[in-house]
Image (tube, rainbow, N blue to C red; front, side, top):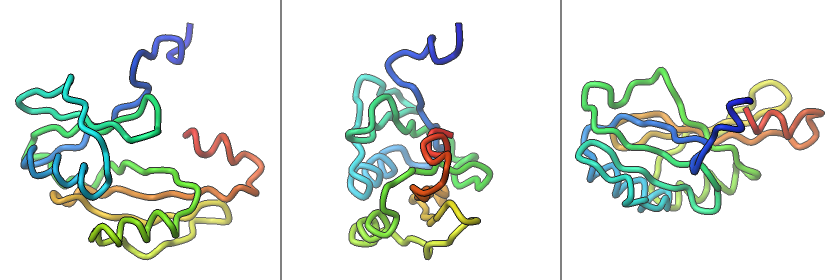
Length: 136
């Protein structure tokens, strides 16, 4: 049996430490259009689903000491990084310029209200393992 066989309702929940749970919940729902899953509300936790992306969510964890740590980055793999960046900018999110990493990946980074770094990633469809890259 593999880990894949043991995965339940959510295949992946990315934990992000925040200093103000309500403020961060509002930012993620208004700016990124994530949807609050109230079943998992707790004093120090809010879980937000990413619309139309099954089994994937972000968990906001009230931990002011860990908020804004730059060691970990959640990266959203998108089909069109320019369109995704433009949508965030339209929602008043400051997004860094798009950079190309090697021949196969484009990246752009932005921050939530606590300074947590989040990323957009576009894999080049012409890469021989494009499907595998997006899954990692």
